[in-house]
Image (cartoon, rainbow, N blue to C red; front, side, top):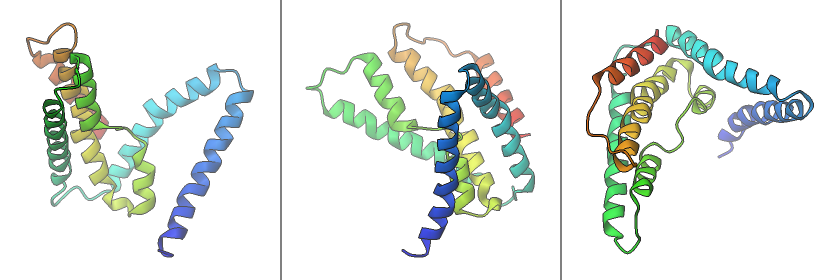
Length: 178
């Protein structure tokens, strides 16, 4: 257990320090500055960082397993969540509640936040696995499957599938990877 303590310290001390610094600046500066900075980092800084790390990564071998594992996990989580909904008929599940529960059960909290943790815990050459898991797995599921579920269980039921939406999503995903 002592072996992991220095790694966690190296991870959390800067993380907590920078977050604290940001909270202090956020209280002092006008609201537009932290909002603009946050959006810029999220939409520009993170994709540039991902592209930089991917250029250094080994993309050969069994990296295709990462999105396959993501989709397996998503469908397993969705199946278990659906069984839970079906097994508890006493609770009156509204359609929007079903969609929310299924989406939360399968996707949880997905986003860029895990990337710094992956980089701190494993060598940068394995970073591509995290990116492929996230981009080709949970991102496609969030912007595709989750939207379809929400639309189906929502007020206006989705009766048609628009291939142009999938094409747009795939274009965005491949642009991010390049």
